[in-house]
Length: 210
Image (tube, rainbow, N blue to C red; front, side, top):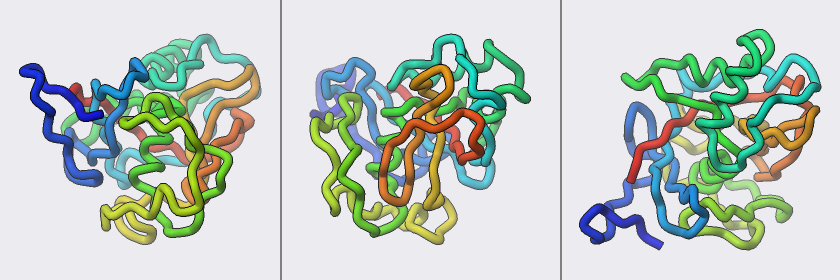
């Protein structure tokens, strides 16, 4: 479904990978999971909005942070639960100022998946075990096929170029158990539950209301 502007005419959807809100347009999300976009998702510049670190420095429970779509609240819960030594990735995103913006956060599971679906860096075939996302626009009720999603058409985000996601695993802010959190492989697309004290990549995002 298309996003709706205040006058009920369809809103103009930015081109994936185009400049938007201090970063780049990564896709739209429906926080209600009804197919109607309420936010444009913005991915931060790779040079300033990406790092490699632990979700947490211990495999122990985090208060809150279990939403698959509310990255801002997850990030706030994580930051409130411990300092940057305990939660380096969330604090990196929360404390970031780049592109003239300060409201960056650590993406939730379904937000991160939208980034992969629209900004997949490599043409390698997807694994067929992930991809369902009720908060994507349009919503997806089935897993990836080998060729869908395809490599992004946004040239800056294609493998080897300036904004491309690495062919590595990226953290989401979504806790899956006391010891683990959700992450996504940006090579094959596999979503997994990772030990929190693993060092993986994170890339900050922000939301712009539709």
